[in-house]
Length: 117
Image 1 (cartoon, rainbow, N blue to C red):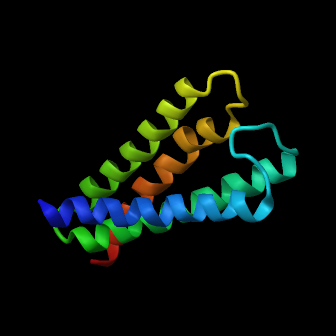
Image 2: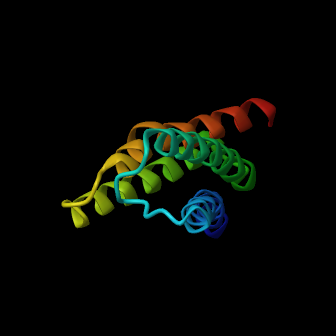
């Protein structure tokens, strides 16, 4: 049980820390409108780190790697949905991208790790 929680937490840390770094270093707010090029680049950035987080989650979990990666995808989507509701008046591009692109990438990372196990 602790290994499962730790695996999902480790994958989420990879994803979340990369997002914090991106927005801190760029000086942009994650829930504000941004130039289309920055939005596209940040979605790609998030997708890559979600994929890596899903892979890490699956590798650390050991048993049922795809299930653990799916749990990570759920955590990412749930967090984005909660942020979407909490900050309804802000721009929604980052939350929607997390739900539609990044959460599936986390699951795909787990599937990728499952093939190499």
